[in-house]
Structure formats: C-alpha cells, structure tokens
Image (cartoon, rainbow, N blue to C red; front, side, top):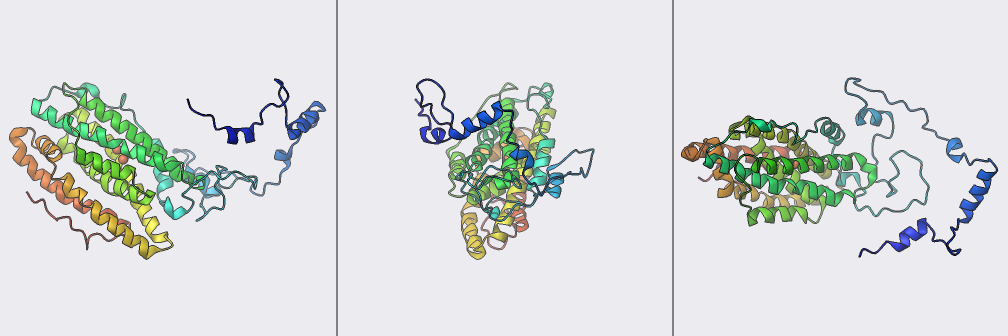
Length: 377
Ligand SMILES: [Fe+2]
Ligand SMILES: [Fe+2]
C-alpha cells in the first residue's frame, strides 16, 4: 500500500488534537472570530499593486489573445536565473517563504528556445483527432506486400513515437515554472506524440494487416534517449536527431502513401513533428550561445554528436526500415529496386537536413561528421 506523505501534509493541514473535534490553528481561530463580527481581512484587496491596470492587446483579433500578446504586456521576458523555485506565476507577488519545489533546471539556457512561445500557440491551434480527422473510410485493400510494408513502418512509428512523450514528461517537473512556456510546449509535444502512437497503431490494425516486428537496435536508441543524463543530451538525441529522421520520413509521405488515408496521416504528423524538431534546434542554439562555459559545452556536444550520428547509417542500413520504405516507394516488391533509388535520395536528404539543423543552431557538424555523403548500396 502507498504510504501517505505524512510530514509535508501535516505541516499544511495540522492534525486534530482535541479528540474527534476539529482544531483550528491560532491564526484560523482569530480570523473566524473576525468573520463572526463581520470584519474582513481585505489584505488581498488593499495590497499595493504597482503593475495593476494591465490590458493586453490582441495583435490579431482574428487569431485571439496569444501568449505573445500577454508577454508583450507584462513579465514576458524570463530572467536568466530566477531567484525562487516556485509555482507562483512569473510576475506575480508571492510570499518570501514559499517552498522550494526542488526544480533542477533553474537557468534559462538549460531549457529555453526563442521560438517556444510561438510554437506553443501553433501547437494549440493545430491539434487534430486521430479518430475524427483521418479519412479512415479511404482505406482500400492493398496487395499483401504493400500492406505488410505499411504495417512494418506503422509498427516502428507506434514503437518510437511515445519516447517523445516519455522524455519531456520525465524532465518537465524538474524545470522551473518561471519558464512556463517551455513546460507548456512540452505538454503539447507529449499530447502530439500520444496521438502519433494512436494513429499509427490504428493504421496497423485497420486494413487487414497487423502489428509487426520491433528490433533491439531501435529499443537501444530509445533507451539512450530516455536515460540520457541531462536534458540537453536527450533533447539533442531526440529533437534534433531522432525526430529529424522521422520528420524526413513524414516528408516523404506523398511517395510512401498508397491511400488517401495514409497520405493524410503523414501530412498531419509532419506538421506536429516539424514543431518538435524546430524547438530542439532552437534550444540547442540558445543552450550553446548562453552556456556560461561555452567552449566546454560545444566540445561536449561534439562528443555526443559524433556517437549519435552513427544512428543515421544505422537507421538507413536496417532492412526492417529501408526495405518496407523501398517497397512503398516502388509500389510493391516488384518495384523494390526502383524504390531503393528513392531510399538513396532519402539517405542524402536525411544527412543534409540534419547538418542544416546543426548549422542553424550554430553547431558545425558539417566539417567533422563521419556520416557518408551517399548510401553505400
Ligand atoms: Fe511524433
Ligand atoms: Fe515528435
């Protein structure tokens, strides 16, 4: 049985001490006496509020009141290192003895990205339903080899998508609430990925196929992300590298999809995935630009990247990944050679897009990466 957290609760809600009847604290008793006499505290009403009178303006009334709008009006720029570790909203007045929430990430460079506020708004505006917004009735019976290829890819995606819910959820509570926009964005990412798991699981089970094979190598990569010792390391592995590769698959959706249903699945997932990759890339940039020991941080990230990049050739020489992709691109096993030509292009593009993301973050991997420019097959 779970033990109740006795000590913290007892300090907030003192246990009754007078037999079975409720005992009020001295402060509560005094306030109750005042209330009985019709006298109110009104401290909350009379406290001086130097920031009172704020009226956030909608930049675009058609869009509504955005986070950018309220940030423009008040307390919109987080401090680099907030003094308190509290859930009190940024810019609110709080008691000086508020408890320490135990946050581990209390510096802006450890979590921030300059595009995170806009990405949160976009995420909220573009939520969709895997039940309602996919034209499931557009599915049609496919040749067995093609359905197997779809289901193998759908199984892989069902397997990997949820890492991008688990990983942010693991770090979320450790981030200071002063950076609430980052936490809110990561909540949208967790929801996006739950929906991605849902949509690919549904796809695998909706058209006469089924769930197929999961591989140890994939699980090892997911474990590396989940158990990365720091947020930046896991974020690089997941947002910049792993989700970048998945985004490139979604971008190929037009060539992979054999039904309208599959096309819409890839299109909608691509929108979501692009946000996640965008946050990770801009977070890496912010991290490297603002780290107090910048040179050391860059050197450490290069060490990580050198190892992590081996994931690209690993991903693209895995028969359970590239053969189904080639079958889909070639429209059947008979067209696999033609499909493999497209996979070779995917190799070049995945490497290029990854290097571009690093470049955007001010992290030069292009001059040092060992990932071959072209596919070795
Ligand atoms: Fe995803
Ligand atoms: Fe994602």
